[in-house]
Structures are given as structure tokens and as C-alpha cells.
Image (tube, rainbow, N blue to C red; front, side, top):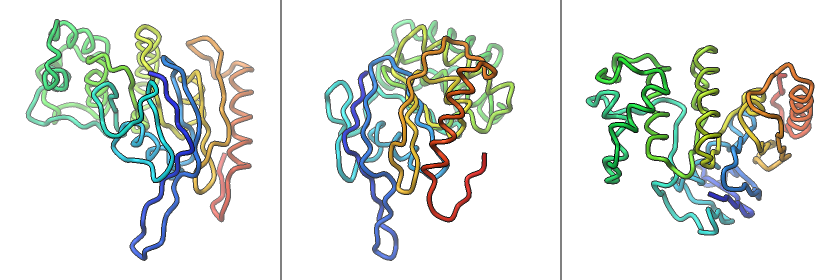
Length: 256
């Protein structure tokens, strides 16, 4: 699914009647099948932009198009994975993974597809477990399996691995890239981690400043899997970090 974001701004009203401008005049495009990473500081409007792509929120001004159709609400072709796992507590792992597909009537070979992604996420043996018995990392893997099993044309991910341990994070990042390389859905991934952005994305949109605006676009052509010690990786990181420092405004100090 091709993305076109055209002069999008977003404002929220404060309790005193003034406006909080979160995003200002955001414009960029991404081709169908791209893995787009939206990178920037915490509080810089990344999640707001992702919510507008999902159709959860609407721009104050400007327009967002997917395959040349203006977004005016949520659509099952766009699946979202949140920062914290959101599972139905009375359903087991298998039924949580299948839940969205059953709601949409997408039941062809569903049991096979569910078990395929349960195995891929390393959850075999936990098919009948309830969410309360799962670790945070396992619960997030269930959410990822649920997002992928319906073959969504666009997957929106809001810092989904930030709370995981380093080993689990690296494993799921690798699996996500492998699935994306195989399926070639359009992915939009939000993070504040520069290394994660370069490891995952073939296009990075750098947001910076307050209100947030596009400070740079990077097309990452290195093959997967990527090596953080490679000279090209270090070059991308240095350039992005320099741009972030330049974009930083106000009294907050930017820490490397």
C-alpha cells in the first residue's frame, strides 16, 4: 500500500483554550512494500502520526492517502501493534491470534495459519495458555502473530519492542524483517532508537523539533541482516544523530 502524507499538521486544545501544535506541515511518500521507520525523540509526535495513518485520529489540516484513497477512518487492511500488548484476557493464545480474522469472516485455512505464526513466534506449547500466564515478551509476540495472520496490507507498529529484554527484542526484530521480506506488506514502525531504525527500515523519516516536522529522509540500501559495526551503519547513525541535535530546540538537553 502506497502512502502519501501531504502537508499534515495536528493540533490539540489545552485546558486553557490555547493550542498545542504537535506536528507541523508533515509531507512524505512511501512506496508499496516499503519498511518505513518514523524516528524521533519521545514526545515528538511519532505516535500521533501513526494514529492518523491508522485512521484513529484525523489531521487538523492536510491529507493522508493510501493507494490514492484519502484516509477517513480505520480499515482492516491496516493493522496496528501497540507499545503494550493488548489481549483478550479470557481467550487463550490460539483464540487471541485468530480473533480478528474470525470477526472479519476470514476463516479459510485459519487453524493452519494461526499455528504457522504461533510456531514462528516461538509460542508452540502455549496455544492454550491465557494471557495472565504469559510474560510481557510472549504476550507481545501473540499480538504480533495476530497482526500478521490476517495478511494485512499495512502493518503499523508503535514502539512494540521497547519494553522487551535485549535478546527477545533482537529475535523478534529478526523475525519481523524475515516476514516482511517474504510477504512484502507495507510496514510503518515508530521508534526513538537510532540503531533499531537502521536495523529495520529501508526508509527512515526523521522527525524533530517542537512542533515535530520532517528533518531528513534516509533510504537505507544495506542488505539484511544488518551489522551495527559496519562502516555504512555507523555513517547513517552519525548523520541521523547530527540532524537530531541540530533540530533540537528549547531548554531540553539532547543526550547522545
